[in-house]
Image (cartoon, rainbow, N blue to C red; front, side, top):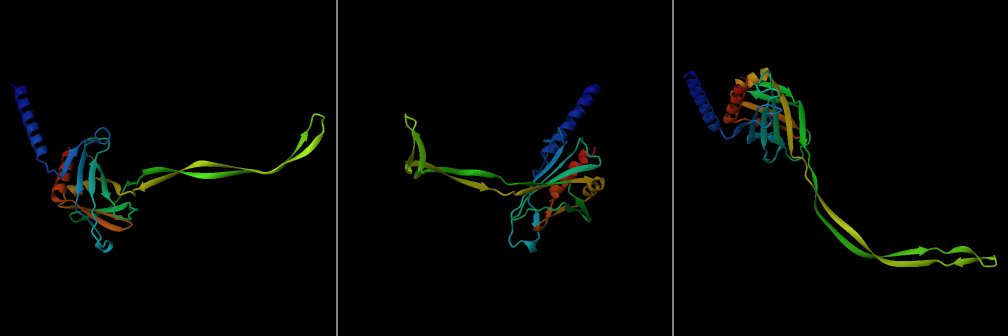
Length: 238
């Protein structure tokens, strides 16, 4: 009877968990694509609220941002949380500063990136064509002087005149079109410590401030994204 009661309670909890998971906002999902090496993953894709410094941009430029949180060597958050911010670059952006800021409500904290990656462009051959052209090639043999010995052993000098030989040859010419795509995405890796995690858990809003050679940009998390991140942290802290 006790086993049956325990099984019923466990089944009820499982149903509640499944309902809560299905009711999550579609702007974020919890996935475990790195679970074998990096632990549970929290992923927010296509965050639309990113603003560039208006003084540096004469026109609005579409930018996409993804934020991914994952654990290292464990399945629970203890004293640190790894965060990767992927964002599309503006034209002519090529240098990313390793110092950035986050603002959790009224707390502004400066942090240093542990790693920065640029997704460099690639070159590909988009078109190749070969043309053949007939050209005349002339080879000239210069005049020479040779010594000839007859059957009696007598030697004499013989002058050989110069000679030109002309032939028609087919010469191939290859035209290759190479398309080059510059890198358009960058990834910033940061490690949040226990104080950072506590700031985020208690925050009403969260912003990240990043800098490139073209100036600064601010990433805003919406209320639903913020709530999803806090729920993820609460759940993984055990």
